[in-house]
Length: 296
Image (cartoon, rainbow, N blue to C red; front, side, top):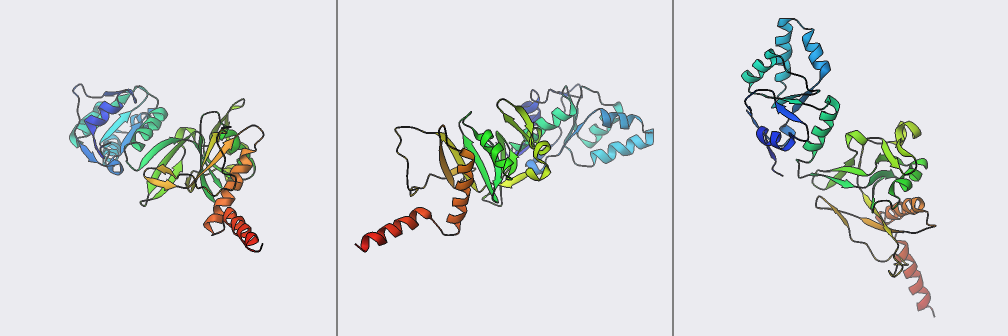
């Protein structure tokens, strides 16, 4: 997607998403802003309008000028409210666009954040869950209903930390560092079949959750195939998992009845940490086997 965000283009892309209508009778798209970081939109609601109406005439002018000095190319008024003539006049003078939205202020802000997030080529939304296990940021992926959330819940109950469930917003930082976080609307929440939506922070406490985490390892849960021959020794290395062009080490764990997936994920993380320190158990046993055979 183009890094330059034009106000007219913004309106065309979001008019249905945000239920937008231009505040002026004639469509008015005055500015062009370059890049996501320079784009700053304000979303006002009932509280802002009520506070504005309590001000004197002089105070209103100061309020408007202060708000419009913050560099927003446009202001969106939620809850289907209308701008006062004073605000419209100042907006025209400052060359700002005004829009009205049928959505609530909260919903409008959430959808706006989601839209802006996807403008950057360094950000993407993927399906999966993100935990911090033994200091590692672990992205758990796999088919729907394979047990990702249930396994994550067991790991959280063991003291590991929760970042997000089902949907992960991933951002590339400093070239090759990937950081994941939850969408704002689902932060702290997890869906468990049979229980519905649960709040991890309320159940396990604030220490059980993180707002964001680096992604160091990907655990892929996959249905065990009878005809597929497993790598019994673990000498084969799975292909890396690619996100935004960055390769992340991947471990595949076959899922089958009777397998304790949460424990296997936990052990997979410890195995990865040992490998990073230079110890690889399969290579160790192969060396011992070769040594034993050489002595015969």
